[in-house]
Image (cartoon, rainbow, N blue to C red; front, side, top):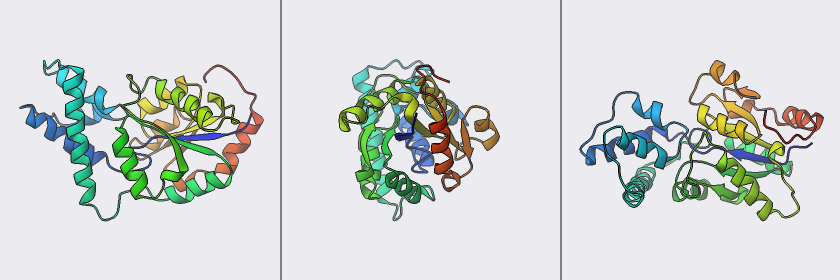
Length: 240
């Protein structure tokens, strides 16, 4: 078995924008005459799609809304996200991201983003940071009906990477996932993939219990050692 693809989560791995999302979510609720409780955003929303997050926040307050109205709310939030990023001269990308991506690219690894964020938000950041060319496949929150910790997004990424690279013959076990939340890690594991946990959101010791590798910061990931582990493992069809 060999490592062929690296699948990146977006919020909390590529860009440190969780405070922006929390602020925009709180504002949406205020516009609905509702309030966000202390710590509720972290509990309900971290690692999950915007749609799943908003749906649960509304439902717990007795608001059952149609998918059409939920989409309208998400579009409004996305517009707010664009405006907030416009105010920032330098995007809050995580240190070492560029170098890590270049390392992977030089090793002929294919890259994808798998996130619960809306596609237009992901594309905005990748284009502005000049990283879009490295990520030929994006699986966004508007591509699937489920949310992490369900594995659907990661499995769809494998399917789309095989479409983008017809000779790749990629299997889930040949993918490495970089995640920062427990929901995302669980999703990757259920998809049969190995996971690097980066301690941007949860403590190192907590991620260490459930990840194959754990780092405090992206530059600490030793790609050569990870590839060696893959080369020593037989390809299996079941998840770990």
